[in-house]
Image (tube, rainbow, N blue to C red; front, side, top):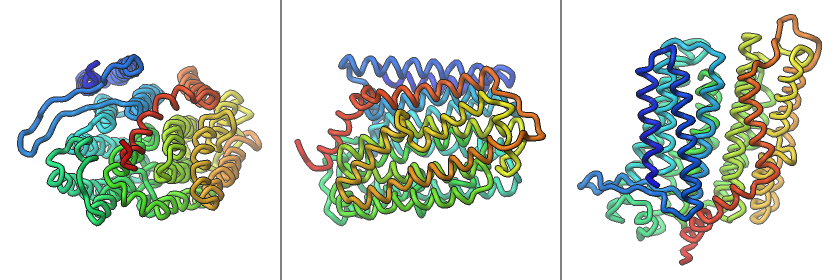
Length: 480
């Protein structure tokens, strides 16, 4: 099956959305995102039937660049995450009105196009192009349709743009050097490039800068909370639910197999940085007065644990990290949408100005509580599967890594339940809080259904991703 069809649909959808005009833009964007989801499912079925899911065309002669797309189990699960969350994110925005809606929704589809290309590209330069393209739409979404003081928003968004662009330039330099060594940008050729120990170290850190900023990993996280707070909720969902997964995916696909010696050498440092993010994010989340910033730091803590899992270099760590990427995507989108529902009714994100919502909106209180419990990895939820697997992989390396990494569950339970108590319980608020509408309920129920289904039955995802992760480890350890 021609995997490029998915990219064509998303790109055509972006243009069709723009030319549909402001009134129809949201509906056209939703339609094309659902078609993309259907194609992703068809690709999954084709892959499970044994078909080769790839596309290859020579593109540029000098240097030799190919329009090369390949989908294995790891790529497909990221495609399914992207194509599942994109229509949910678009549909969740139907309760808001946006000026110049045609541009807003077109940018969402274009961003989905670029992120999909990043997950599919198997040529280094093509991958880099898609990586950078994904930055453009989120920059404008956050800058034009963001909230709060305009000048503060500009500072936050420009800082994010410069940070990520600067980190990506180091990755581009690494790709240029690898091309000189391998004579190709193709992923399999880069895997086989003969690199000295010193060359691997420099390339490893060049990749690390790009990925650590995008994920983000401490100490490259300083852009995150402000941008999450200032971006419109749709932008925050795209960033936290999908875009940061580009960095985590790239660690597994590009960084580790290309630089195996450096990956093994720096393993303790990298796991330490991931766990530091867990502890730092949790502690800072405790002190937040703004609901979106609290959720931003909560996301930082969870992503730190995922990064630690990626760098364990064992099958349990890699598998747990991927499971946690998918579960985090759905849970964090659900939490930010819940925060948006509160903002629509109370016109505030300050936690102290909330409270008493449960007595007015029991249905919303129940749905929000389920998302909170999923965030703290309650057994039977998707987060529990991923976090338990990652912690088990950390235990295999050093018991203290597992103990410190496990603080995400303890601290997370404390600040999330405390937040829920302050936001939802207490005396009835003087402001009226209408219970969730049909479309708000629909989005939350879909997310919760995914969380519980894969929390109790993660086998389909495990079977999909394990062969790809085994192949990455064989490349890493030079096993034929």
